Image (tube, rainbow, N blue to C red; front, side, top):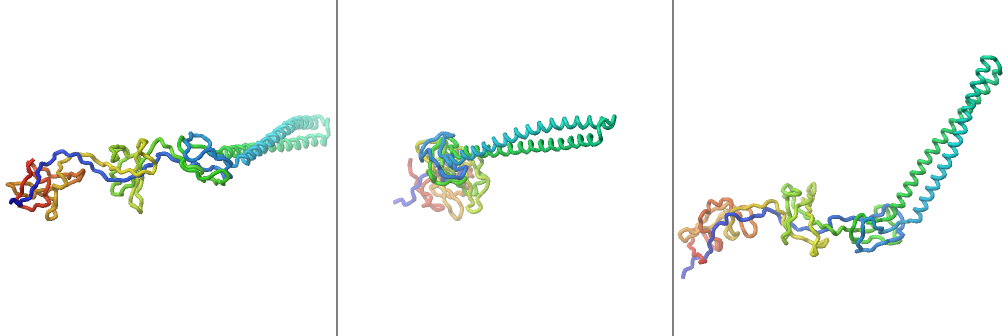
Length: 353
């Protein structure tokens, strides 16, 4: 009875397609999401939408403290009206004062000439006319200052009115984009502080998958060039790589954009390969390569005996191993199945095709 091991022989595959990459697992999420937060503080008067609702950009979602804020607008408008009325009064007084100053200046000039040239008036009369000019000039300056003060008050009132109107406008929370409301965090009657989210929403039209990768791959990922291949065959380029590696976990994030399909939903897990490089190289089945004496060895058949040939192995992919020194196996009958049972010089039997 022939007890020699039965083996299968084959040849080197000269151009097998290898994928140099890393196995990753990522989470599906919508590419665009937002927290619709209160921009003013106050009690929520109304909530105009519910969780799960599809909304359009600009659609009202909630209203905060509308009556109180409308009253602030009316008060600010009243202050502005008062300031404008004061300006009109001050301008009228300035016009009157200016006219009085012009008359006083003419009178003072005429009295000065009469006194100096012909002594037709007394010095006292001339001095009284000059004093009146000075008094009128001071009154005119006060009227001008009152006009400037009224203008300043108007500017302040206009600013206060603009702020009150903006606050009233901000009290209405609206959808920032077309999307779906995924969570309602506050309801009518609740108090909302500035920045406190009332709704969370997603834009369901575009999905992305976020992956966490080990820091050793950081320099091998290039946005727009490195691709991700999902297990269902879809391939898409990397659209984002975090600018730094997390100092504790020693990982970094990458993202890819994917089309929305019925089999995807935010929160789902997706397995994929991050592909750094695609290339072709000589290859053997993984079971054809073993370790003997700390060296990678392939057995070849010579004179019906197993002869070990050292090989330089590279990447392993799809049950194949890259052979970097294919010349050592040129034209050889390579043991592709059964090499684990062999030792150097063992006689073998070859399976027939």
